[in-house]
Image 1: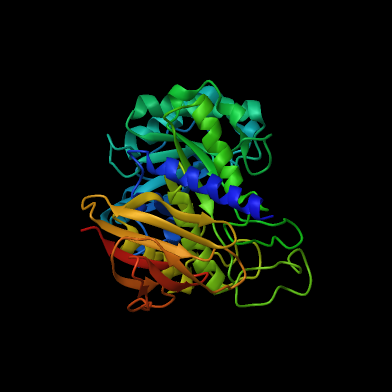
Image 2: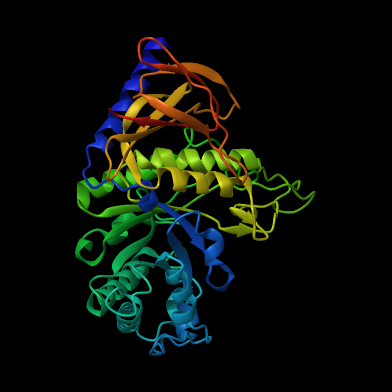
Length: 433
C-alpha cells in the first residue's frame, strides 16, 4: 500500500510540474469564468468574481421559427436589444462567450441547413465579433445539442463555423460540449469535429464531480480519484494534443449544488443529495486551483444565481436571490488574491494527504503565493511542514465579507514552515529575496 501511494504522489507531481513549463499558462483571472443568462444577469454584482462570462444565447431568439430569416441585430427577433444587454456587460468589464443554443431549433426545422447555418454564423460574427461591435469574443456552436445526431451536428457546426470565419476571423469559434467517448445527450463525440481544425479555436467540455446520476446525483470532492471529474477533462486535453495541437481547451460548465432545504418527499428528486454551502465554497476554489495545474485555458462555474431549490442545478448559484452565498466570498477572494498569478508548480500533491501549489506573479516574479489544503471530503485537519519561500503572512479562504482569517505559521530552523491545514485552502504570501 505504501509503495502504491508513493507512486501516486510522483505521478501527480510530475504532471503538475510539466504544466508549469507551458510559457503561455493563463493567469488565474484569465482562467476563471461564470455561466450566466441574458436579462437575469446583474453584471455589477459579479464584478468581484471574474471578468469572463458565458451566456446562453438562443438561436431561436434571433431567428424565431424561420431559419432562413436574416437577423436584425442589434435586436433579436424577440426584441431583446443585444447592443444594450451585452454592452452593459462589457462596460462592467466582462468578456463574453456566447453559447448559441440549438435544441430549441429542431434539426428538421431548417429550411436549408448548410445555407441558413452559414448565413447566421456570418451575421452573428460580423455584428458581435471583435471586428464588429466588439461585444462577444467567442461563440460556441451549440451547448449540449442532444437533439441533433452526430452527422447533423457536424453539418451545422461546419456551416456555422465557416460563416463565422467569414464574418469575423477574430471571433474565437468554440465547439459544443465534447466527450472522448461516444456521443450522448449532453456531449458530442470528438469525432464530430475531427478534420475541421481550421474552423475552430477551442475544444469545449462539461464536467461535474458526480459520484452517481439518478436517483441521488450525489457529488464528491474534486480530487476524488474514484470519479470521472478530472479524467473527462484530461481525456479532451489528451485528444487535443494528439489530433488538434495548438487548440485551447475550455471547461464551460462545472459546479456544486448547495441547498438549505431538504429534498422533496415525492417525485424525481426525492433522493437527491446536495452539498453543504461550506463544501460548495471549498470545492469550487479547490477545483480552480487544480484546473490551473492542468493544460487548459478557461473554466466557467455553473451557475450565477439560484432560488434555493433542492434539485439538480437548483442551488448551484454563487448568489441566492441575488444575495452572496459563502461560495461567492470564497471565489471572490481567489480572484482577488491569485488573479495576477499563474501556476508555477506543485510543491506537493499527495492524494489523500496534502496539496500545495506555488503561484508566481505574472509581472513581479519575486512575488509568490502558495495555496495548500487537505484534498479529501472528510472535513479533515492535519499539521504539515512545507518547504516554501519566506512567508510574510498567511490567510484562510473566507466565507463572508471582510478581511480573510489569518493563519498562524510556525517557522522552523530549516527555513520550512509548519502549519495546520484543512479542507479550506490556506494562502501563504511569500517573497523571494
